[in-house]
Each structure stands twice: as C-alpha cells, then as structure tokens.
Image (cartoon, rainbow, N blue to C red; front, side, top):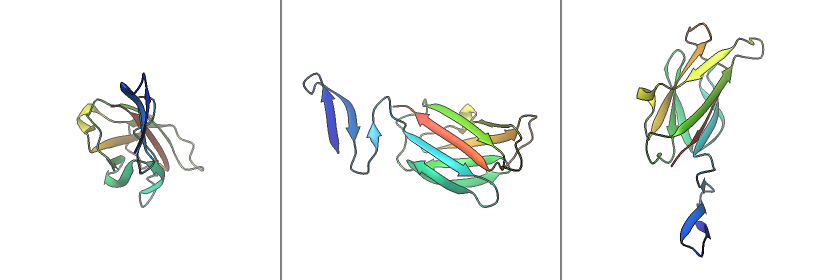
Length: 126
C-alpha cells in the first residue's frame, strides 16, 4: 500500500492499501446496503464479503478484512419496500458484534422481526 504520513513520517495518518481501502480513524472500515426482501442481496458495499440470512429479521454481515477489535462504532438504518413505507429499526446487540461479522436485528418499530428491502450499515473503528 501507499502510506501518507505527517510529522516527518513519525506517525501514519492515512494508509491506502493495494485493494483500494483507506485506513485511518476518519474512513469507514466497512459499509453495505442490503436488500433482505427475498434472497438477500448486497446492492453495494466496502469490506463486506457476504451477508447471510440468519432468521426472519436477522442478517449476518461478514467482513472481508476483520476488524481490529469488537469495539467499533456502527451506524444503521433501514426501510421497507417502496410500496411499504413502514418505519424500520436496525440494531446490533453487543453479543452479536464480533471482529469477523455483525448480526443485524431488523424489526418494525413495534418489534416484529422483518426482512426489510433496504438495510444500511456503516462501521468506523481501529
């Protein structure tokens, strides 16, 4: 990869790897837009090798390159199909967060598990 450093090379602020990933505290370590309606599909992603259907309303996002630890920060959101504008909650309980993958729980706001048409996750960390 290519290293961009500051302070005369004393510390690396940003590394761009040969596969195009940017490594720093201000770049996303992984992100994905997932369609869980029917066959699970990754519409677009970065550092996500695949997704698997764990159960109704539960999607496992598997990282291509593992996280340094399981203390990463995650932002999630989701929505139903365009014909179903129901509010969706996407969360990842702590026991479902690992260095190799994260399991997302997707529910309607009233709590019923749902395979939503549009689920998004973005991860920052070490």
